[in-house]
Amino acid sequence: MGMPSTLSIGHCQTHPPSLCLPRLSSSFLPRTPPRVSLRIPNVLRKRSARRGLAVAMSMEAGIGVMGTKLGMMSYFEPDGTVVPVTVVGFREGNIVTQVKTQATDGYDAVQVGYRRVRDRKLTKPEMGHLQKAGAIPLRHLQEFRLQSVEGFEPNQRLVVDEVFKEGDLVDVSGTTIGKGFQGGIKRHNFKRGLMTHGSKSHRQLGSIGAGTTPGRVYKGKKMPGRMGGSKRKIRKLKIVKIDKDLNVVMVKGAVPGKPGNLLRIAPAKIVGKNIPKS
Image (tube, rainbow, N blue to C red; front, side):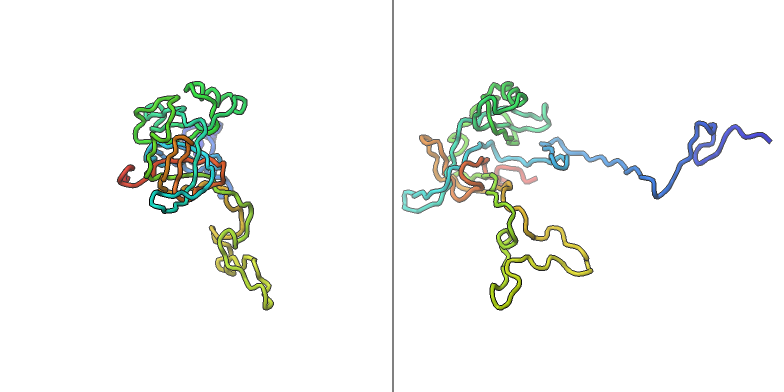
């Protein structure tokens, strides 16, 4: 009896054995995960360097500027009221370096440069990007995503007293002062143990979890670690004084960082007033 010309293995019944391979199924073989398509709307996409994820940035209430923290002082109002203020100075900069539109980039935003530096302080791609806009060499570049970018053009200089007025509310962002690796008492305001009466636990953290159940430490447990050096935004600070001669702005209250740090000042976002509710 002769061999049949076709072989039936799995799903293959019409092809010869040399062209047919059986389907193998085993728990030891790696399984190809299904493809998941995530559709992100055409909003500002910011690439995360750590995980490679696309993060959508929020809408700003209006164009803002960048400045340098100079320090704090007491400001006396005409009626004698003492107001603690932070003095923010402005170096050469706050120049529009790029205007992004929905047609070209998928969102509307204005890129602003701040703090002039020497040419050799920047890379050639950075110099080429600034030369394309006709701007001077600038150290810091930040974007302000807006509802509309009409009226902005490359190499346009933003004047602080034209963007803000005295009495306006602003959101100030900056990097907080780094404290290094700190314990639980300083980092999370934990209470210490007794220093006398035979106590063996003074500034130690203590128990960090239960026993066999759950047998692990919960995520987000407050423990010693690196403190400070993170981005922080202080919202709705009032502009007390704008001094054109000294080119400084006095903002009521404290802002992140130490003197000399970079600050980002933008109009305060009030839902339903200057930004949409959705």
